[in-house]
Amino acid sequence: MAAPIAVLEQQPVTLEYSNLLQYSLRTLLRMLIAVIVSLIFTFIYASLAVKSKKCEQILIPLLDILQSLPILGYISFTVTVFLALFPSSIMGAECAAIFAIFTSQVWNMTFSFYYSLKNIPQELHDAAYIFRMSKWRQFWQVSVPYAAPGLVWNIVVSISSGWFFVVASEVITVGNTHITLPGIGSYIALAITQKNLYAISSAIMSMSLVIILYDQLLLRPLVAWSDRFRYEMNAGNNAPHSWAFNLFQRSLIIHKLFSPIAYIAKFILYLPILNRYSEINSSSSNNFSNNPSWSDYLWYTMLGGIACFSAYYIYHFLHYDIGWSELLNVFVLASITMLRVVVLIILAAIIWVPIGIYIGLNPRVTAIVQPLAQFFAAFPANLLFPIVFIIITRYDLNPNIWLSPLMIMGAQWYILFNVIVGASTIPNDLKDATKIFRVSGWNWWFKVMLPAITPYFITGAITASGGAWNASIVAEIINFGNRKIAASGIGSYIAEMTVKADFKK
Image 1: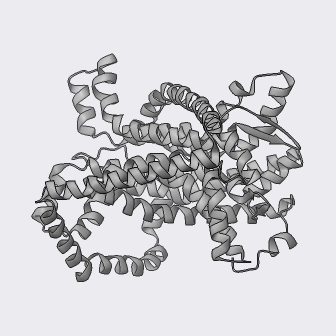
Image 2: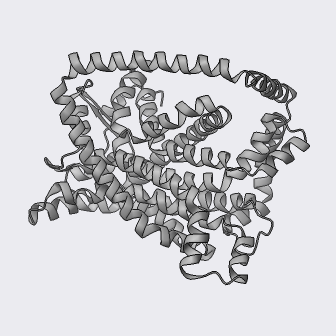
Image 3: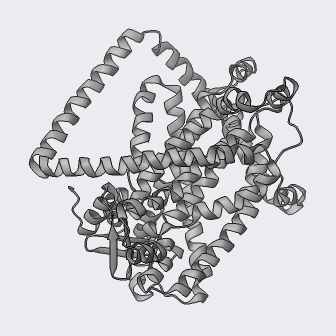
């Protein structure tokens, strides 16, 4: 990573099959780093939104806006920043790629953790108060465990989402700046450019192997581990199983390796400074809330000032730098993309909600479906470009219609995975009650299952809409060789302006 950036030109990406394993591992490492950064961001951001009503009024709408911004919108600005921070070093390009993957992973994790924190049962808060837990301990011993099942499932879909945008993150083109990092994404991009179908097939097989390995050795154990935190009185016999998790539990080597980490974590958890700080912080926040009228007055005055300043800046920028005719054009393109997103989300919900409920209620089916769903969720839309391109050109189809399904390819899985975790976390007591009272048919669907999964579905639908907006940059304009097909929409507009380095537009 510390090597000079000129090395990327001296050792360009090639289509040699012997490099596929190395490229796949490089890409996987970038995604794992992005997941760790996403977790840190999730814990801080969601906690601030839940603990403070005033912060919540800004942070949650802002989060919805941030998740809807296409990934190229971030790359356009961050590439310059990271290259300036690490001049003439690969580190700058690597940070830009990791940040791009981060923006494709973090939003659904944050939404999931936020909604879990909002729905923590009052009895858990009461128990924490009885045991005199500090805010620091309450976060790690109550909040995080309660949110763990949903958060782990969203980590699963986040990693898959990172694969979906792997080409955009590893092949960075902004104006005259063109950076190609070694990885499976850049390998796929080169194979598509050269129309090498054998190389594309090899990339698919390599991706499949890596996905199966990390599913069995990392994700399935995480899902099995997080199931112990399900909030119910009767655990039942339908807990997910993982052979790797069972092996890790019995392995003396694993225990020896992780015992120092567990000791350090326990030491930090009970560190007096952190616990004292959190208690002082909690009491000070309560004192502040005793004067709601004064604090609210200051808060809304500040928000009003920020809103007025922002409105003036936006007006000045649009009037003098962009022009109202260009703004109208962008508004029309954004409306077209929004219509696609709404229609596709509705169709995805109709299809995947019943399927997700069935899978979530059957752990054995979940164990079979999860790796398959991960593979299809991770499948980069770029790999379908040759097929879609040939079909559209051969049958003279309308790109505005037939490029749309590419947008939902990665986004639909947010709905499926969240519905699965919602159905899988339904207490067994509730399931037993429905059997005792013989609740079935429409009553079972509309009075039991749909209300039970609603918080999870809302999380999935919100993040799916953001994912669809994000996917518009790779779905509304496709390249195969030197030819391209574009649909009208904000995604193709951003992609073209990014290549031209027209940052104002």
